[in-house]
Length: 415
Image (cartoon, rainbow, N blue to C red):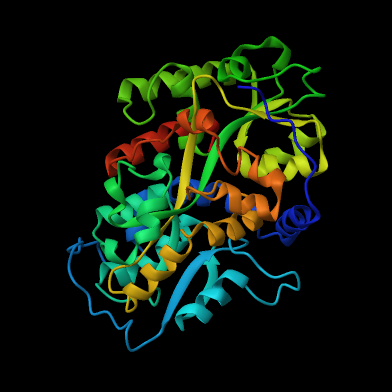
């Protein structure tokens, strides 16, 4: 596949991107290490520390158990999300899609941007979930690995398909059946987050970089390559390059990927492992090529035409942020109606036009083109069939695997 040649972005896109970049709390912050992985827990003394500090020991709830739903008499819901993950008006005083939902349904949405990273947020809601109490939230948005953990523990309510006709019909094929929630019984994706190869064509001397093999072995890139400090992304992309399926790999496959990256570290081919801070080095050309996140690439291209991306022939990793209804939430039906609302193509297009991540809703292209034609043709927002076919997900891990793999990866990156 050819690397993406950036088209001229609209003023609305540029404004949205710069709001995100300049806020100090936007899309780049969402791609921080703590948010994307479990590494933050390890840095604090291991994943098990989340159960310490007075938090009750986890007990699995009955995931399918009925919970009193007060939606009919209480026309409200509370929605916890990341910053800069919802459309806002030009004067930044209202949220148009939420406003339209309330006008249509009469359901008031208390929208809170109280998620800064997954580990921190899980630590915030775990005491109530473990004690079988209401978290005060009817809808939350968390990254796939944490969504898998919450579902595994029985701390998410099973969704009613009768309230989700648009979501069931319109969720894109690549997001339809994650191994941690087959058939989307408990969750629906909010956005997809592709991991791609990004490069600065000026820094590479005009050459395209489109494989992990090039990143690890090309002597012309020595010392000017970075990988991500998110284990699932860097290991997942390396597994694909080695012909392994990140959805089915073994311990031996994982160790093989670690070993390959370690050799590149020892030869100083890899300059460093980064969170989102690779973006400045890539834009300046200090880093010539890297494993990076598509949302960052879109933002960088707005100001630097030398920034390109490539999808390796071996495939690429896609993670997702997902909507869940926590156990004991009071307004499950209201939350389901909001999920379904965001799967209506005109609404999904309005959201995608603002946040610039992969839209998981089929049938949105024509609606997005009405807002901005260049966005509708950007495969980092709406993957075409070829790109979608190369998308792979990192399989869900057991608690034991998660601890062992993160420890090995921490040693590799010097964390």
